[in-house]
Length: 428
Ligand code: 0X9
Ligand code: ZN
Image (tube, rainbow, N blue to C red; front, side, top):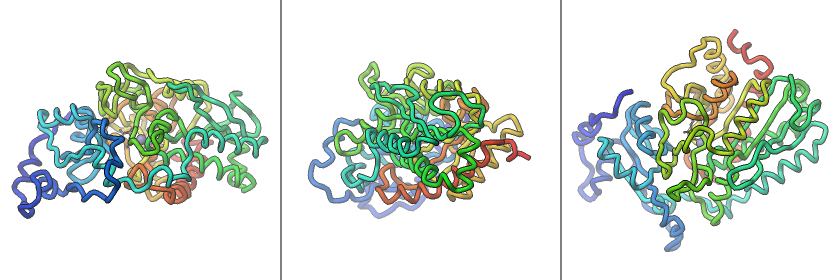
């Protein structure tokens, strides 16, 4: 693997510097094209004190390519935005101190409280359209109660804190956990707590399918497929993110680690090249892979669900944000070896992207990160598993984002359902 070089630093220092008033960090950022910190939005004094004990920083760090990006993940950076020549994301204070020692160039840094003051547009009170855990469970219960012929609702397991991970099944012929020989599709949201839009899209898909159950296309899927939708796979993390009434930018679940930091990154905890790349062994890191593969009840529940259903053909894990449709491999810098499978992945990703306007891409071309849902589901069971990074420029895009993102992603989901009976048709 290529290691990051100091080439960019030389480049930055050769470029014209902005006016003398700018701080050295802002100068470096401007020279590289990276954003200098914006002026804080007016907010009540102390409004973000609740983040004062959170030692994470929002940073922009030079990164030319996916190798640099993977090295940064390894160093504990939780990459949120990828731009030309640099990335931005969250990093714990101690890991930040280590970046310079590794020759990595930090273009800008800002304590998370300052970042929140600048970026937060909507407090949870203004985001009432989003569903918390109880509301999600209630919405699923209502869908099941209103559509008893087509649905059943069950839990695929309990979380770290004992919440149920609810899953709605759409299949008029088989109910509950009864096995099926029908081709199955599995849609999930909210592996990452702060990615609330991902649960809304999955829930929106469930509502849409049932509201349109008489439409010939949807009816055809209901009568031939076995469809599962688990909108909130990390409910503990979701509740923790919103518990104070103000967002915490929490990504992980809520396991209390031995060093008292909170959470394991569920999308680094699957047993597929576990923690080999793009993940951190440091419990405080946002990309902490956990003490061992499948150490977490949430990822184990999904593992057991998938392993118990050999009829599963397709899987979609919704995340946010970046407007991408991603497919394996994520954990190694290589295309899927089987040519026919690779063609299926590429064709289906392209097909879905044509409905969303997102970019189809091999996950490891974004950055190499091992232990995610899709690599494991494909490696373990040959499931054509995708990650959709929903649109937007923030984890908290406000209520208006829900309808927009759902509308286009429901179209893509219908396309995926259309391919579920025979995914290999996409390779012919
Ligand atoms: O890093 C992740 O887990 C996903 N991105 S997110 O911003 N939602 O956290 C991307 C998973 C896809 N895997 C790779 N790009 N390797
Ligand atoms: Zn995510």
